[in-house]
Image (cartoon, rainbow, N blue to C red; front, side, top):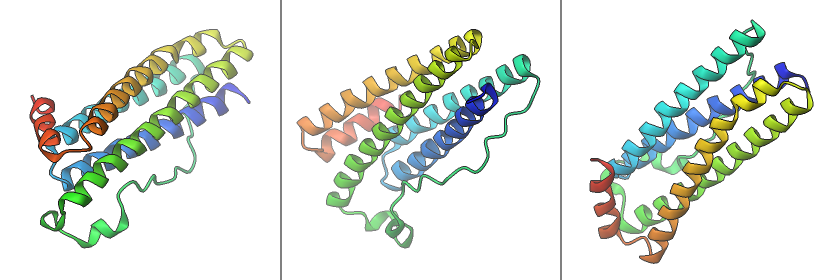
Length: 175
């Protein structure tokens, strides 16, 4: 794989990550979980900034635009939700939705770490050391996000996704 192909893969992944956080924002908004919604908006902004850093780095070092190619829609929001209004959501749907959302978010971030680590190794094998080192911050960001997700999942599981506890978390996350 060339450096151009590696950066195209990174850009494609980052754009899909923006889609993931955008959909998670709407997902939590539909469930009426403003704290989780705001948290996803924050991750969206941070990852948008990282995407622009990636593009700028590539332009500065390789003097070209990155062509990410076709990007698939992550489709995180269940299709059946588009036929309902927020007031249709019962407590069981909300609990299951929260559990599924955190599971999908974790799965995405694990994929992100794998993508960044493989790209790091690929760039090092091409002797593109500065490009590889540029990815270290992204890897560290994903590790921190995975720690947050794991802590949140453990806390939610320990109370069996109790909605009173979940609502208390919303207040904490919205400050």
